[in-house]
Length: 359
Image 1 (cartoon, rainbow, N blue to C red):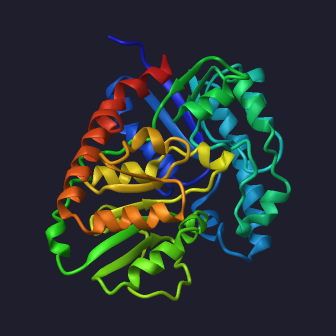
Image 2: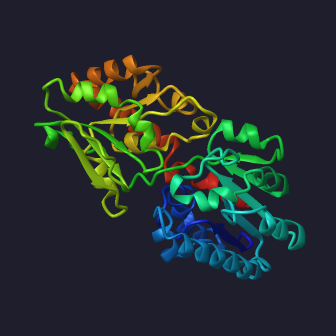
């Protein structure tokens, strides 16, 4: 029988709120107990603070929330004392130098598993959080990597950067619980074909980069509409445009309404660190994906097999049109993508890999 272990999970947001946490480690928590690993989960943000985090005002309440988070982290240090591992997702505080990470690794001398899924060493704070942006300490990423026992990240680009500071790196892809997704019956959308995008308000600008191609397609008279699933409605004045407010309760059924999934990205260092999660979401629901030929996208999409990779505005128009015109192609590409997720990016296929983090 394996010796029991105790793990403290420290992460920014309240549980079951953000995709980064839900799909990188929260969906594995029930499996830890089955493998004699005991855990305790502790967030920086309280739920009330999270609810005002992206409000473009309420600066005083945000300041109080930050102070509360720092005090919470002081208390969390006590929990770490008796742990075998401390799993840190992204960072312990959204502001300032890595004081708490230093205390955990150098004073408490704990084995830290440092997990991240973006190029978080680069500045990328939302406009709604200018207060935090002004006192953020992006260079702390390098120190946290150096002090950690093990690095957990989702692609080679992130791993190669972290390798400058720590060679004990494990690729831990962002995965999907395929028992909750299924290739939907798109025949129910027979009257209209739906081009879709899902994301947050911080990334909707990527979709705006191909707005010209989308408008051209939506104005051509065919029964084609654009569905945007987001936590805030983009203010677009275009034909055949539908918005659904993102909800974790309906995210699977909402995604199933899409026939063609989009993932535009800019050619930037930040984009190269992305894990292609939108593509995996589309694939898991049997939806072909069209994406920018940037970063990990080219390793997920086999051009012409399970989707298309775009290098310019002309590509976006041509490849969307190609999938609009062939229902059979959409079906076959979607099934190939679905198999990729099941075999390589599902909760089931990655469970043993995730558990190896705690060895």
